[in-house]
Amino acid sequence: MLRTLINRLAQEFSMKDLGDLHYFLGIEVIRNDKGIFLRQAKYALDLLTRADMVDCKLISTSFMVGSYLTESGTPHSDATQF
Image (cartoon, rainbow, N blue to C red; front, side, top):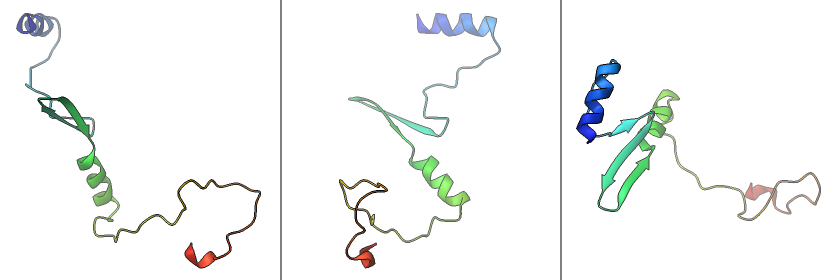
């Protein structure tokens, strides 16, 4: 049934069957027994390469988990942590 659909679409439109989907619009598609897995690791690496930041050093976030930025409140007591 799928082959028939592809053939009919090819008669109406200029197209070709490229087989199983592996990469589309910056998203890598990986199929396994549990389903389809989508990831953007290659896209992120391409962005880092274009920005010349591939070899940058990683750091952990300097923001406390569960904290929110507001205009009210008191400043942090030890600004050297940030």
